[in-house]
Length: 632
Image (cartoon, rainbow, N blue to C red; front, top):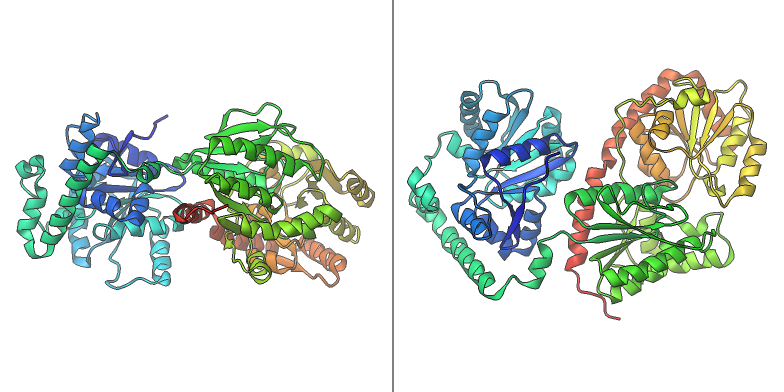
């Protein structure tokens, strides 16, 4: 398996130790991934600017690959042992890349005037006659609105390119790529600056001897002295100044921390791999993606749930600690022990799962760590909590506003309530989902003697607030119904499970907990997914079922309607048993309409991809790390 190239920080920006061949190989590897990526051909101007402007430095550290476009960068890398024989000049890199990637690889050109793009297109076809040019786009010469950006993304994504070549000018193109990467599911965005104009023949290349001496800038200054002299005077000087300063005095401490992505520890979940509830899925999906990006990610697992935790899983370090496995003490005891260990290890960011753990955030802040709390809805309203536990959760909402650097609410309803009751507006950030387009066949349907499109599906913990009882009461009203598959369980709700067993008919199948392919196969083949709960939160299972592309019948409430929009099939909360029974009877008799509802759900799923969520988290990390630390 290919690994990413070595990177060496130059003035705080990690620059890849690559030549043309290895840069092409890494770009092709990135293009094969089911995630967007960013590559920049950067010269001393961009590297100096990234050091000089803190926010732009963060932009450049978001790139997957920064190529040493200028000779001074090659020299700086070689001083640190890179042993590079040449730079990777953006226009030459683009030329070689196009030559190396004929069909079925697809290219898209973004930037430049229509005339430049027309000339460039002819030049690229001459370089590679078998090029698949998926599209070209000359954006308007004005400030771009959100509607513009959405349309740009739609145009690019619709062309299904592997490589998107971007020429908008230094700094602007890098910022545009990073700001818009979350809008795309895949494709490598290449910031190549002057490559369009040079390859199109609008300007001449500097003589080779000047390029080898590292004075291409002098040739450009001779071409456009009035426009460029201030830029070169400033940024060439800054490059020399910062290089000498760091050589003599060392890299500033804050910048050394910025050379790596922040370390993150997840506390409060049961652990990974996900085997229980929504928080575990969030930690798994978010954690493995952050680890793949280069973050140091640690997850604290509960030993009764994970008796022999792997030391590393999906790039995440796993630390197993014990707890007291009772409903009221399980989470807080394990999180407290995890926090004590975290205080010793000193992560950059603590991510607390669940508002009930909020009081522990103050300990992390006192130790200089930043704290994110995902509050996950109105926990105190859940039927399983009473007495002291309910009071604790109510007080925890106020503690969350005092003991965190960022509160995350997965639903606008929750964010509105925190602002109204506590004077704090949480970051409204939904969970993500994975679109499941490839059919799964692992024998799960055969195991339960089920037919494709021939049953209803319920997936959740079997606890009172998830309203499986409501579903079973409605199901009893049906005559000759489709089978009902109930996926889930809960070790603390044995009496509730006995109640469900008493309500179930012989057409109800309790599968227990199902994971991975077994869960996916059951989900992909259901006639409809049914969600009778009305909890004030975005249910992760709801997002997951959106990604399955199946019809969704749901108990009408603001939080669920916010997620589904017009893609779901609601039943009325005024007479829920009869209304749900009517919806189930309708779904049994209308398979084609259910299929149409499933297609609407699949379209709606595009709004919640994990790639979009990850981009939002990047912005949150940057913001809270720039905030001053709390004083105790």
